[in-house]
Picture 1 (cartoon, rainbow over the protein chains, first blue to last red):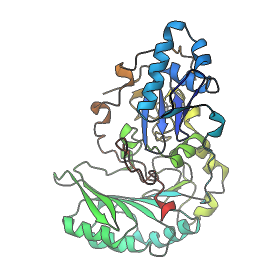
Picture 2 (cartoon, each protein chain N blue to C red):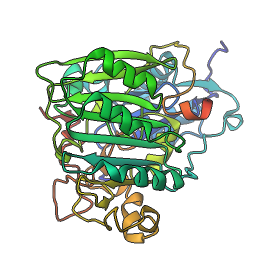
Picture 3 (tube, chains in turn yellow, cyan):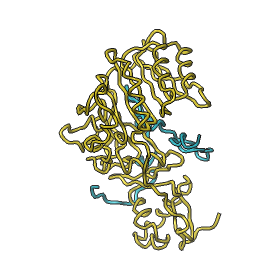
Picture 4 (cartoon, rainbow over the protein chains, first blue to last red):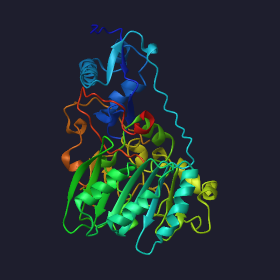
Length: 345
Length: 60
């Protein structure tokens, strides 16, 4: 390794992007899907002073902090977030513009015992024509393994590539039956069985060389109220998601939902509906500016979230808000306070 | 963003350690949003990283 001298520049790897919060900052490593906490002063060094050599950076701060600045750089080097160079111009930043040719990229379809499954072929056909790639099927009721199989087989020939399935427990849900459902349908990326009689376990099922989680939980996920959770467990750290979250809403963008009553919405938990699937085409709904309005609400627009260091890796929720009267209010189910950097219990 | 006073702080402070287990405790009834298709994957240092999470469809 070349020896460092004070005329050199410190440079973050292109995939490592700093994000400032109120109390602390993070550097998101979009390649390794991880992040590192840093003090805000280091964020300042890495952004405001990024074009200065080390000697000039040290001059910008009190002399007695020079060793701390060295420690900060060593910390970043030891975690493989950056390097020293004489020619920073040779290392351009990653372009984080975002675009997607899909008119709709993801959909949530809710069902309960009263929802006619006969709607399904028409919905899938419409979503396919909009190039939708991912669907979450949320069955709040119990459904036997054979019906699950039959329902999912309807995606044959569609544009759908990834499917999350959530179903209420049924006595036919043996591990082997559910394994078969997963293996017969390579689109399934997660199968969750809720309301089990006390079974709480996750298996990794090998299907098409991928490990697919088969989750059994006694939690009762019987309404759309189970959605909207904000937790570090659900952080997404990738180039694709970071670019999208900085430019669009991390939940609503290019999403459409059909609630359990058949109403087309941005999200099943929102009251506003744009028509019924029986009488309205999804393609017509997504052309309406009122429908796509929320797609452009980024975390930089949301109260409190705009001061949070996790804002470009965290998922938003516009349905359950702290202040229902304010569309830009903080997600109700987020328990993080960026001003104290603490998670509430 | 609200104005904050950037000051030199020790990296040993609890504030700059990784998230604690209590921060990552299970969310009752919580399921990750659909479209990411990837839950948090923290790879160990030096891992053979392959494609970043969420890029599977572009690699096939």
